Amino acid sequence: MNPCALIPIFDHPDTIEKVIAELPGELPCLVVDDGSGEETRAAVRRAVAARADAWVVRRDRNGGKGAALKTGYRAASERGFTHVVQLDADGQHRVSDVPRFLAAMRAHPDALVLGVPVFDESAPSARIYARQLSRGLVWLACLSRAVPDPLCGFRGVPLAPALAVIGSVATGDWMDFEPEMAVRMVWHGTPIETLPTRVIYPPDGISHFSIALDYPRLASLYVRLFGGMLWRAPELLRR
Image (cartoon, rainbow, N blue to C red; front, side, top):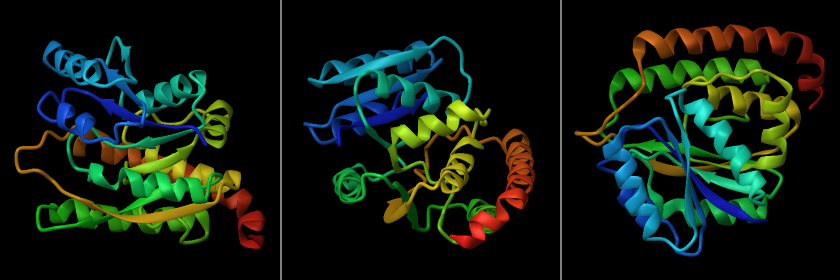
């Protein structure tokens, strides 16, 4: 297994340097800048310059978290990496858990390792309730509870099956991408491993999740996944 860290970013200038600095020193790091402004670009340049094995892929325009992750998967594979530890740039994820994800990935190199959030009192109630609904809809799409949390962006991704999925079907480009990938990788036959990890919502944090835009995208996704489940149901039930 040859892993790297993968961090998509869009305008998080106040947190990205700390996130990158806390990564294990021996772990290469790929940052995908999804059309950020100059302040974030400068912060990323400083953070990457401080590491021995880190680089940036810049997208000219903001195309969404899913689009940035797909760019990152392809760029990591082109550089010879077989897996990525994917985490957010906004400080929600506990970077000190990266070694735990790496250990799980080494123990299960064929598996998608999904973070299962452990929230504290900083988590907004509305987001918690929405996650519960997403969990139920994803369980229906998988006909199993293999995916305990489809929205957590802290995960260990084997690149071969991930690239097979995005190369075979048009996947979402925004916040709908991560739940879609979890379901489609289950459909693909990728084993799922899970790892509890603390997730926080910093009081001054910047969220790019849009209720007006991302909830309709997620609703459309779950309708499509339900349709995809129907003709896969016999195979999924056999598993």
